[in-house]
Amino acid sequence: MDRSRGLSAVAVTVILGVTLASGPAVGLVDLTQPRFDPGNIGQGNATVSEVRTPATVQLKQGLETESYYLETPDAGIRVTAIQGRPTVAYKLAIPSMGYSRGTTHFLGPDDTGWVSLSLARDTLPGDRVSASSYEGTLSVTLRYNGTERVLSERPVTVEVVE
Image (cartoon, rainbow, N blue to C red; front, side):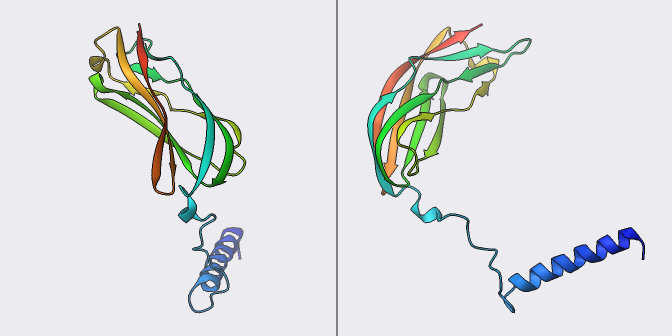
């Protein structure tokens, strides 16, 4: 038997073995259990003593392109106590552009102290940018046990950098 046929036979044997071991007839291995319990995300609470958000956000024009790159500096929260797995949302809204972007950070038992919150850089087409600056709003919201508590909501200047 040549080498490729031998490897094919081993692969088929492994696939059939795993299928039988995890199937309903034998049931030795359960491959459907999640690695973590998603049911507890958003449950619990956190005590946040301080929130820091940036004073400005920049829309930078790309080199040799009509696009602009929206760069939002990180925010930070100081967590002094935490129970369970609450979440924190960090959001930028620019109403005059019809723009909104947010992200959710999942807090865990090791997240006491300063926690950094970030928004990924975003690309906007050049035809959406027509002013030298825009007024936006940055918000940080704690979500726990089906409740939302706004930790910070403040205006931010979005500077257009040519």
